[in-house]
Length: 243
Figure 1 (cartoon, one colour):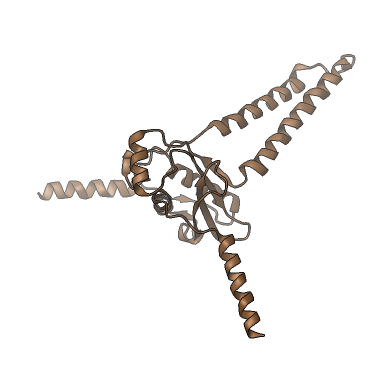
Figure 2: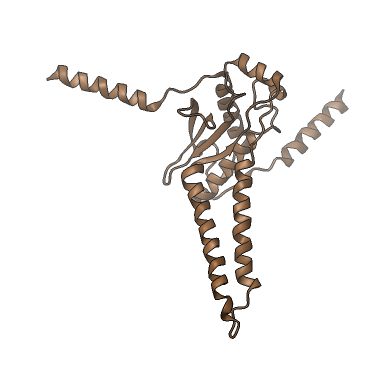
């Protein structure tokens, strides 16, 4: 028994030694958000058996179609740039290709502009989109939990980390549904980073799992606009009575 206990202790020590915390310069806001976003996206994936309250029985798959479309546009733009750079002879006396060179440059900048518009007005603060559930057993389990529409819509994962702010927000909502229900949670980044910049990846993953399970139960947040309107009406009535 003593030898077995000693072996278990040695194994636990080895596991602790293998656990390496990622260190980040917390003054680099872009890097901090990148690490947080990557952890959120990695947690909401089919490889995570602890994501759903039903364990490995429910798997969430990422939808790569939108990303593949953007990659296709990027590849097309790079092809035109490569032709303009290496495929045309522009030195004198071969300047007859200048119109073709101008066309390649124009196409490159147009596609780049389209990509920028997509990221600004379509993607916005979205970091990933998932597919709707298709397996009948998964659909039955999730509907039993309370969410009745995960077989119709995927999940749109949004994150917000305003400049000069310490608060990081994650929003889960239905993809493609107008006025979608959502769940939202905000944390101080100080909860996941210490003063030396070491990142508690497991701590954030646990928070995201709890947020997803709330979405899975259909325990949605109330729209802030309606709450704001109610507050305004109450204050208005209060001012009238006071007068």
